[in-house]
Amino acid sequence: MLLSDFEITTIDYHTAGEPFRIVAELPMSILGATVAEKRMTAINDEEIDGLRRLLVSEPRGHADMYGGFITEPDDGGAHFGVLFWHKDGFSTACGHGTIALGAWAIESGLVAADASGLTDVVIDVPSGRVKASVHTDALGLVTSADFVNVPCRLIAADVEIEAGLFVDLVWGGAIYACLDADRLDADRFSSDSSGDGLAVVPGNVNELIALGRQVKAALADHPLTRHPDDERLSGVYGTVIVNRLGTLPGGELHQRNVTVFADGQVDRSPCGSATAARIGALHSTGELAAGQVLIHESIIGTRFRARVLTETVDGVVPIITSSTHKIATCTFVVDPRDELVPGFVLR
Image (cartoon, rainbow, N blue to C red):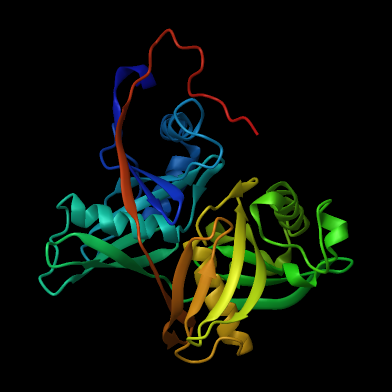
């Protein structure tokens, strides 16, 4: 089947500024008994991957676009499954996308809103089974959603990847390298620095992208980045670059981050799975007290509220709260005369 043979309709959301493009009805089937198996099929299937590239590439998308294909769940315990994707391929987890999917499931009528005002939407993703607990008001309108992730844990602390550059490796549904930007020599990484440390601000975005790529490259094939149970989940997915901002008057821990994932993509939100990873790391070191909330701020100033929900033998289960909003319904077509198919990425 050629891309020009069909139209593709998407429902677009943003969660704290980060886009999420939902494809509810696929024009092709994706083989696999589980969502994790379907991900491997999608990676290796030219037609499925071609659809991803069509929707993420310019002129229909952009270098920082994110989205997901709705699939069957692994079994009857979930409402549906999803294959997350970005400009470089298919990811194993996506917190901001899970929050958007929870709202979409309620607003589309796929899952009926509970009269209590809190409805659990259960979703199978490549890294496991997650949940979006969706809050609705008296009129049934979605007000926010809680992302409940798989158990998260610190893998290793203070891993020196090159002289003077240390990271914590953390599992948050994907493997992240967390880097304390306050400890950096700003002159080494930014031409526009003031004082010690590298500020996570829009003016430093190019330097932050370069640093994120540098960290990921340095950890390629590192033995600590191998998943102990599933090789498909191995490797560093992204770098979480953090400024610690102290404690707010209400007692919440306040931090700002930018997550640079895949090949230089910048998460506009505080990043759901990276926030989950931070919860795992901060709980392990004792920096986040029992019951304490982490206010995790993004590079553009949007915020997630996160805390430990429960503790398990595999780590802590985080709960992360954010608003999310539908922004568009789009129908994409391909003109058979168009030479820019599936498109291009300019960065």
